[in-house]
Length: 106
Image 1: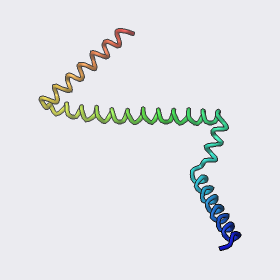
Image 2 (image 1 turned 60 degrees about the vertical axis):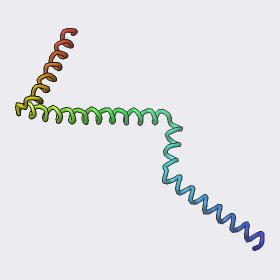
Image 3 (image 1 turned 90 degrees about the vertical axis):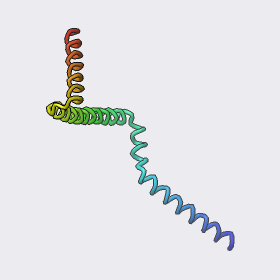
Image 4 (image 1 turned 180 degrees about the vertical axis):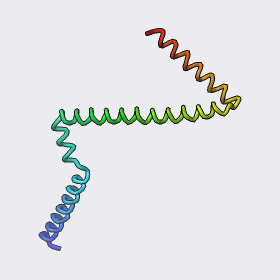
């Protein structure tokens, strides 16, 4: 091949590679990320909102999880199983003692 043909082929390959890189950058949403880096107030606000939402989600999830566990422990306690019933009674005593200690500090 001649030199001009090799140059055309090389330029064509470089052009195709650049187009592919552009498509990949567009998919990665780099423009939005760069926009956020240039607007620190917006970045802080978005992070604050996402942190609050994450915290609320964790609180709701833990509440539902704890309520479910307590519900099943109550059902197990109602069955009057000797070992489990004594264990649950001990947990209740510990919780009541802790609540009494906390209320005396107030």
